[in-house]
Image 1 (cartoon, helix red, strand yellow):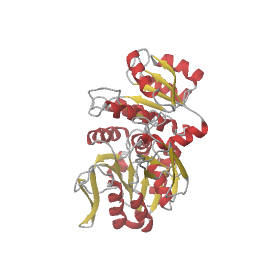
Image 2: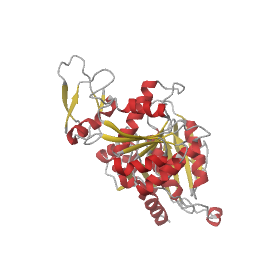
Image 3: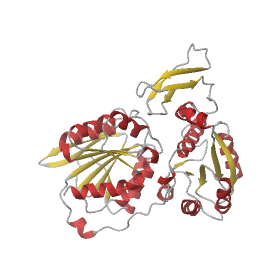
Image 4: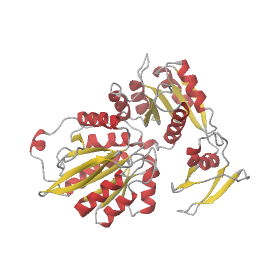
Length: 410
């Protein structure tokens, strides 16, 4: 059984084999906090999945359940989602709406903590409903959407307009088990409830490219190595579309997501950003004013060839493990030292901690996303607990900070 310390995010492996007590107490190896863990019941632990142990103590302490509003035009889907979520003690469905108009009437009365929202609905579409929610009653909202080639743009639009994350509707046609789908839904709703409301807002990216600055690209003065996992889509949509096209910096970004999704995301960013966005390819020359998107199943490093910085991109030899962020950061720190900026965004695990430590050791700058604005706080909390981080920045302020830093490096 895997649990996470609520205070510092440290992961602990815990076994109840041979244990007769109803609960175990362990001492966190990182922060020294005492963690009380109830003995798991097969399939359910105190009404919540084992992966949600990080929230047990907070919920028990506050005696507060997550209030959820389900918005979907299908009665069957609403019933299925209600059945999944109400089988966990820490979630309470306070209402159901069949369309966006009904939802907007119910929100001020029910005051939900989280909203699940279907994208395709009659009367008022999910996107239109989401825009009204973010303007009138900002609430953490999780979209039900299929991130297919056809649905990618509308899904990313939802994230751009303020949705916290997205998840497919439960279906036996998906390539994961029904139990895993249920667990994913519960995890997303639980994580969304912990996102600070100040990070939920409509993103209005700058449109258009300064053609003159693009033609007269400046020399690359700094390299940004950025790592993102769970919740990464949303924060990158707040960041990349607002980066200036004329920056004397290159941005190398590792995103943990399926390759087909990363490809679609890159295309979406390219069409919605002033700065140039492309998928990282082996032997690409690293240029200022370009964002290179790297899939988490790839290892990207930097080499110097004839005085030019060149990307080396190859499939990871350990595709089931996280290590791509560390690999990238170590390589860039070695080559560029003080010209390097390491950035860790929302995600689980601790990939990037060793890499950002090396960037700091070489005289570079370290930045993490403010934990309260993360969907998953584990990566940033691990970095903050193990490294001397230079800056902690909210997701909505990252672009302004990077624009300012990059321009000062000229």
